[in-house]
Structure formats: structure tokens, C-alpha cells
Image 1 (tube, rainbow, N blue to C red):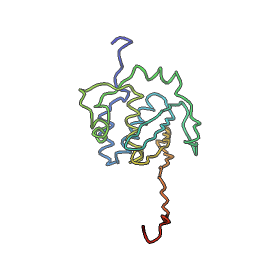
Image 2: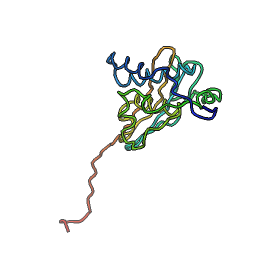
Image 3: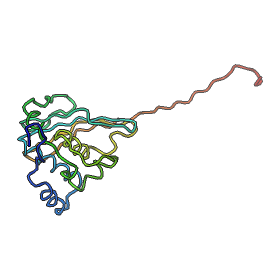
Image 4: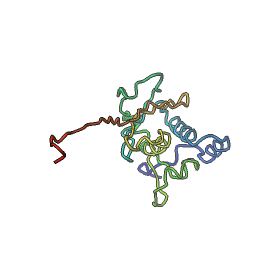
Length: 185
């Protein structure tokens, strides 16, 4: 293998790890979180932040940030106090890829439901994003939509979501208009 070829999966034995999780009967969001935490730990990443937004049946992850220090406590998600992923982390992740088979079976249908592509590889940053998308609040992209930030602390294995839902307020009032015509003419 040359230095320019992608390296194998960052999980030491992904199927063994994932099978253990599924045997424990954990929920899909927990499977996604454990998957993300496992990948983060493999690369000595302690904090992960994901900003998302959507409306009118369309939503997306706007940006992500990986850090060597964990996110802790009440870090204002909507205050924008997150740093960009450092070049050192990007350099460490760049040569590594995952395949669909590296993702937990329990969340594969959601992640690849519209994909007709043959098996392919995913850079680690995108793989983390795909798994994070599974954990976002259901319906954040529907109608008036919503937005927020999810942070993950790899040391504690906890995710925190600060979410806001948008709601249109409609106010009605009654108005009468008289045409000013006598006898209805």
C-alpha cells in the first residue's frame, strides 16, 4: 500500500464492536453515538460539534468541528463559540476511510436509503457527519423547520443537543367594510 492510498477502517474490528452493541439492544441513536465516539477515540479527538438547520422539507448539517479537547457543560451552541477543526486533526483523518460495512447495521438503512451507488468509501469526516445526522431531532427540516447544535464529548460518551423549532404565528382579525350605498344599490 502506498502512502497516497486510503488506509483501512479506523475501528479495530468494526463488526465485532457493532455486533456487541446490537446484542445489548441499544437504540439507533445510541448506536450512532457509540459509533461516532469509537471513531473519535481512535483519532484522539475529544470534542465534536455539529450545526444543523432546515425548513420546508429540506435540512442539512451546515458545519462540523472536531477538537482535541472535549465540549463540557453549557457551551452555548447557538452562540457560535466553536473553533474550526484544526489542520492537525484534518491531516490525521485524511488518509482514513470507511465503507458502508463499517457503519452499524442498525443505522445503515437510514444513512444509505436513497443510494444506488456500489459500495464505496467515505472519508472519516463525512462518515462522522452521516452518523451524526441520524441523531438530530426528527423533523427539524419540516415546515417552518428548526436549527441547533449537537456536541459530543468522547471522554464521557455523551451528546448534547441545543435545538430551536421555528413556528409561524398567524393572527386573524375581522374587518367589515360598508360600501356606503343606500338601499343596497
